[in-house]
Length: 280
Ligand code: MLT
Image (tube, rainbow, N blue to C red; front, side, top):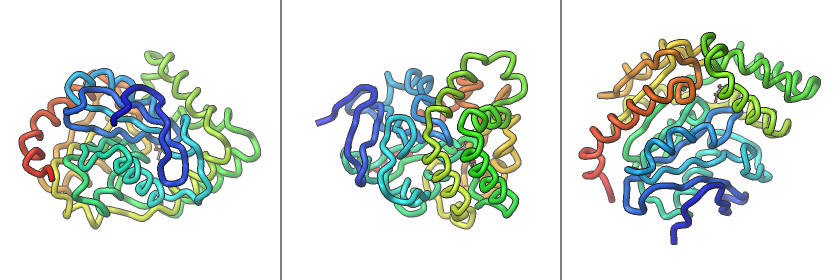
């Protein structure tokens, strides 16, 4: 029996997961995976915009938002298993997957390992590459800084890279919300996730094998995973679509939700006929 609503708890892969589940029972499912170090509430605008036509689910990755950390060592593979176990618990055989940044790393890992579980992919402000040595060194430094100076300082430094410069004048409320999401994340989750991100494997070699409709979205001013990275993925994924979101940095779904949602809706409506024939 489905249990729709907000902040629902469910036992998944040895920990409690918190998720939102809205929209009609029999509509196509879209699962949203958030970026680091945010939580499912970053997708509120998308859930609201799409819940009349789709069953929309956003969940908190372990340790983030209201989901428990559990006892296992964090890795993108563990997060992928959590996603598949959540789908199994919710009896979702196939879904459209939309992931931003870390959510995109999980989505790319998931489609590589479980291609038959997905109808379509939306990859937002993300990358298929592994961390280069300089990125690994930066993560190590960030862990040291969090342990030494605490989460608030880390949050303030992160915001500079997450948003486009113009957003600091126009999106004060949204920036305050994101800051709140970061400072509510425990030091342990921040450090364990930074370690997991720094050892993640690349998925670029597997992009040509993706056999579902793919939309790639990226903020024009994204400093973390810039449009050049999105273009490289677009060239490797056959028939993929690429759209660059104006007035947006790394958090393109928040910074320009209007354009983001239009792209999302148009892509899903256009892909419906293709993925219906792929249902089990
Ligand atoms: C994210 O938004 O998920 C992070 O920027 C990912 C990363 O640090 O690689």
